[in-house]
Length: 134
Image (cartoon, rainbow, N blue to C red; front, side, top):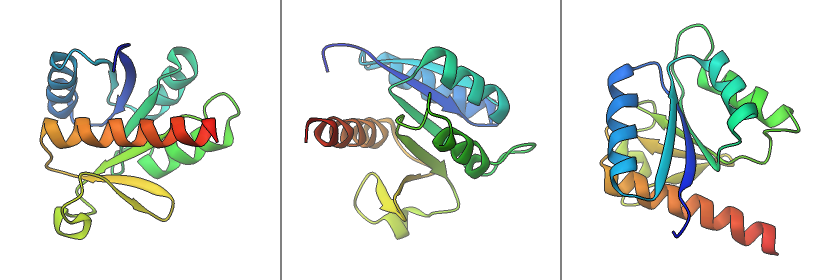
């Protein structure tokens, strides 16, 4: 990953934003923008044009699924892959994979470690790149 990939993290838990941002940026492969608010996340997605969005499902005010729906309906953001970070889907349901596609959406179970999260991001970005090349 020669160029740093821009990641937008939308999660209402400030400590998760802090740790994910620091851990991903420490790998040298990512620039991470964070917000704890779904509405602000929508605006940041339009302004910053991230390569991928990490999105919590259960958040106050605006749920992750509502944020995702808005992203997919907007021509400026519909092409950005979204990976849900959630405790709703357990690691047991995902199995040995670092990320699982369920109903056309990607999920990473909380808690997760940085290595698995990086693997998940790389896999989703590679799939997007392959789909665009096809």
